[in-house]
Image 1: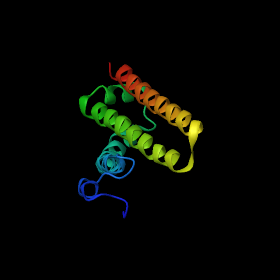
Image 2: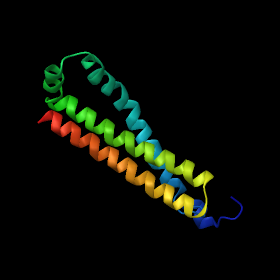
Image 3: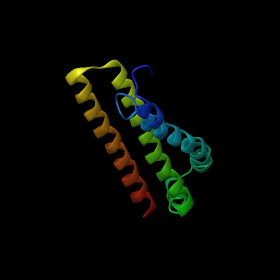
Length: 123
């Protein structure tokens, strides 16, 4: 912290200009997951072992579909943010850039596939 100017120290911006924002996003998504995970388990857990028709009927209702959709989106967002910080810490150069690009593609692809499957199941 000795190399920060008074203004940067006051606004919370370090040399990367995004550390505070990244930490804030991770904190918010983790708080959301603390709430969403039990709700998702209470929604999804009882459906294990049921027939396909019962599961489709259950996820056709609004509440289970919304909870599952939020869990997919927030969970994958939190995964991307956390894994990106690991990549930032341990990789350098072109490998780091390509890894972040692959991570973003995979996380958004899984998000889209999960939401598509949920919509197809609910409709």
